[in-house]
Length: 366
Ligand code: PMV
Image 1 (tube, helix red, strand yellow):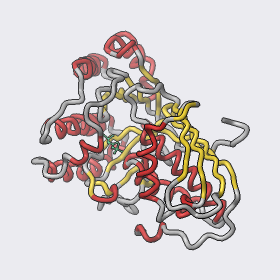
Image 2 (tube, helix red, strand yellow; image 1 turned 90 degrees about the vertical axis):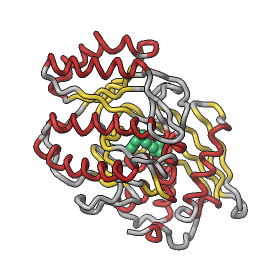
Image 3 (cartoon, helix red, strand yellow; image 1 turned 135 degrees about the vertical axis):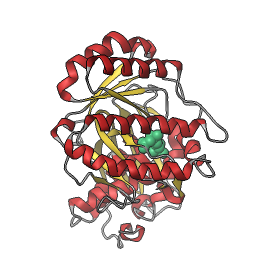
């Protein structure tokens, strides 16, 4: 597939108006995407667990303009209130995707969106938010082109999401999604995420991710700036090569259910991501003292309990605590006893591996 394959043929019979809706989850990367080329092409391949509880719901109402416009026309309502600060992000997204969904200039849109997780929890809503909006647009495209197959729908939804926020392309499906060209992964693509195509051991079913909200403030450095700093980064070449190697290693880890090796890869990826930040020019640190306290507690507990709890980090201070279903009681008790104290206002979110976005039955279920 190339970009051109996502340009639709001319539409006929644009509908006058309608309403569509999607709920789309967030995801947590195991092998991290950090660094990109032009047009949101990743500098290295990545893989993630799709989450379940952390999600965005978006309802998109569209009404045909009298005449095709030259600018995008939309209103954005976030959690019941107009949110003008989101306008530039949506405008950039629309201008990146208008070649692929040309009807964007034929309609006025009302985008109503809300997150399941608390606002300013430090949890990025770009993956769930951009993928929910991309899916709504695909639903409109499907009304115009009903012959579109489910595979085409999912692939293009992921392709469009990527143009909104890279990691968003991994939120369409579950439960493990890979994105980015990787020689050892058939059908992998820089343009969209694919459902992980190889065998996965049952130990990874229902994997838990308890997200510890260490710092709910606005990040000092956005991921856009962080990605950019990977250009001319002294360790970029080695880092990108390492991501390819880690993905190859994960193949047997997933197949065999090798949790020890899984932990090594996942924790090293998290720390490498932050090491890249700390060795950029300019350098920056997104971890907080409590992030490190939690990591040390996890290591000590894992050593004495023999469980397989591990951590990963996003581009922020929050800690994602990962553990298998069969250890959930013991690990959850440990989290409550020893880790919650390091969370801002003792806040955390219990999430787990999920199965991707779902259509909202508009009118009935929103
Ligand atoms: O999708 P973006 O541009 O916000 O980048 C996300 C980058 C990380 O969350 C740090 C890693 C990843 O692969 O999700």
